[in-house]
Length: 515
Image (cartoon, rainbow, N blue to C red; front, top):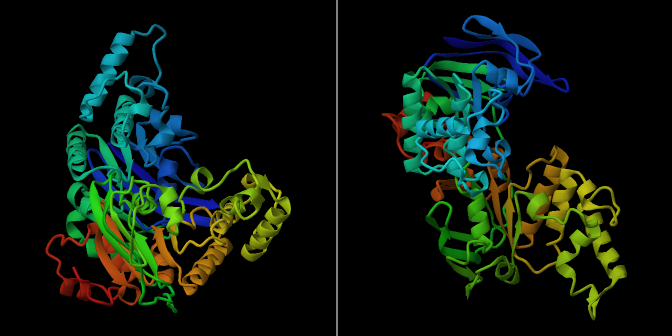
């Protein structure tokens, strides 16, 4: 039994995303598919799972060419996928067993007792001991992921795609998942394993294929390639980014936090940031970036010790954070940063109601003046204060989220993935705005999974893994490869490679890694 994807091409709006990719998986094999963001991994797997149509090429299963017009076709040919965004693939108000049988062809006369028993057997295969009557909305993230894996097994999948499967898992839970994968291998089931955690790839995968710019740049046994060599293939030899040229860091410590508790990761973090400093905080999916951003903003109930400008503060809620000069530009702007059914002017002036109101009455003239000033300053388009904010583009919505803080006295700005889903021009405008804030002495915490953004914007870069700081680098000592390395491994030495060996192996590792 084998799966072969041959000479796969795919374009979007005239831009080639996949350029003649050949990818194959054998029976009972765990095969890693690696690449940086934009390399083509997701597109290739969407084609394999029936969510996208290939432009050219062929797919063969057991030497028979197959065509997938939709996900159901792929499922019927034994293809299953466990997506990273598990909530989008499950029905929260249905039970576990109802989700397992969803999309499965059932006989005309159903024995619900047998259905429940088969559901229990599927959960047993993934070592998940929960009632099959439990509602999905009552399940933890880890349980939902295992339920998705159980579902593809319930559907008799022979080739299973796991997309960043350990992102929501603890070390113990990851070991359980690996045990399950080894059992599935023995049953002849093949796994396509997508992950940025390269130490896990070395541990659990038999083969590795690496994509870069829509092409295969390496394939072979994981036993014959080091993590450092994987990074070299993923990054390439000709990727350079313009690094931050000017810094506005002053000697004044603006924010100091000690023993900040991250409940989702059961970890604590110490954090310092100076006036005018832009601190980039990066990490892979599941590293705890957003959780840290929310904790700094007081969303964990104030479990930590804050000092702002040398003065001890009590921050037990976002209200406390705002009153002490901390503001948050959240990752999910539509859900957490905007009143979508309100006007642009309302959203821009929400934090200035005291200034534009009198005796509980809103001064519409002042509201129009203030919102008009911010619209002009931020180049928000269209320049119409009365337009509903939900009709703005993603980039202009993000400008509104930022703009509502600009006239406040806030001195500490938290940006959580601020360029997510916006175009290049809007991204550059936001970068310029952040630089202007730093020049004014504001402190910036910039959370991002885009390494090039951190290198071009931050004075100092902190790498997170499992809710812990594993490395802190000044910008002039940081390289793209180092950021990928520490995010992937946490700085732990893997195999027998030493710093000197890494240095010799790669021209791209231009400075010795401090492990």
